[in-house]
Length: 177
Image (tube, rainbow, N blue to C red; front, side, top):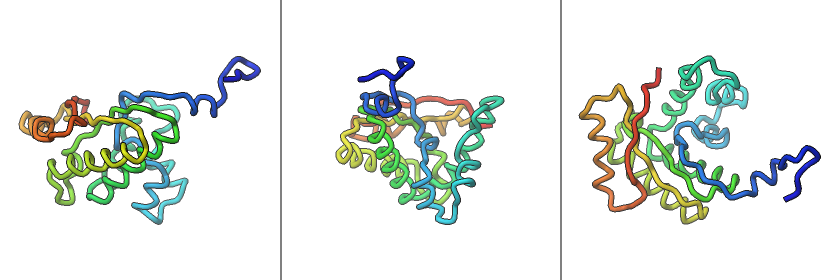
């Protein structure tokens, strides 16, 4: 790789390097392309304001407020499949060779999907995308700190139920405030 005038790699050189992504949130990675498929009337300015956190956040809550908009779009089988496929296209473009993708299945039940449906849809979409892109990945199912013990156990159950080794475990996150 050629280093530039100030000994830094160019964007293209960085993109070409193989990389690993160990803490990626499915609901934080929606591109304009996938959002425009799910909300055809969206403009780039609206996308930037509603789906991209400010460049300088005052606190974590300032950063997290954009996640709700993404989660609202991720309530159907079609939307979950599109978002997962889109994420893998982004990973492939950035030459990510392995990713651990986190998401909270219980946040995607507003239009009638069950937690098992949600996990199955994302896991199947991920498995297909792994074959298509060559990007290896695993899912981490997240529970949130404000969830009840029962909700947390519901989140953890698919780790035991799925025969796939693509779901190695669960994680906990702070509540979105």
